[in-house]
Image (cartoon, rainbow, N blue to C red; front, side):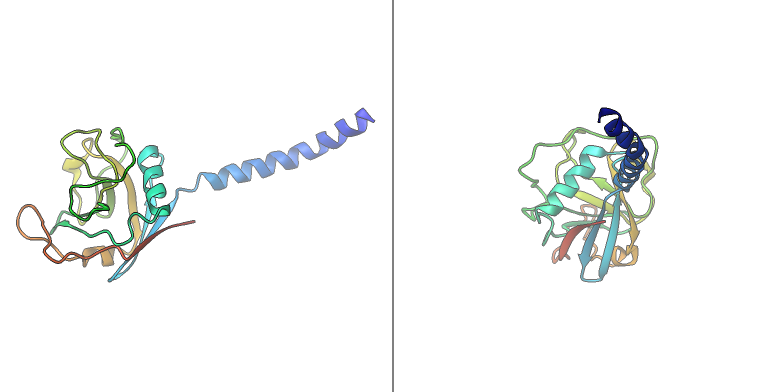
Length: 182
C-alpha cells in the first residue's frame, strides 16, 4: 500500500510542480489600477519590483475606495498632476503609517511615470501620488517610482492645470473611481 501511494504521489509531483510554477508566474504579473477620469480611463501598471511597499499601499487604498473622488489639487503644466489626498486639501494622507523611501537607480521619471508624493522627509510618502506630464529626471533618486501609465495618457494630459509655481487648482478635476484590475 505504501509503495502505491508513493508511486501515485511521484506521478503527480511533476503536474503539481507545473501548476505551482504557472501559479507563481501569474503572481509575478504587476498589478494594474484603472483610474476613471472625466476625460477617459487611465491604466497604471504598478512597479512592485521597484517599490513593493508603495505598490502594496496603492492597491490597499484603491481597494478601500480611498481614491474615489480625490481631487487633482496640484497640477503644474509640463510637469505633473498630484492627487491622492483623501481630505482633498493637499495636506492629508491615509490613516496608515508613512512609508520609507524606495528610491531607485533602475528607472527614471519619464512621461507617465507615477511617483509617490512626500514632504521634505524622504520617509513621508503615504497616499498621495503624482503623474508626470513629461520627463522629470531631476526627481530620479529623490522620489519613489511606483508605477507607469500604460494607457490613457491623453486623458491625463487633459487634467485642469493649476495657477503659478504652486500649481494650485481653483476648480480641480477628480478621480471618479479607481479600481484594481488584473
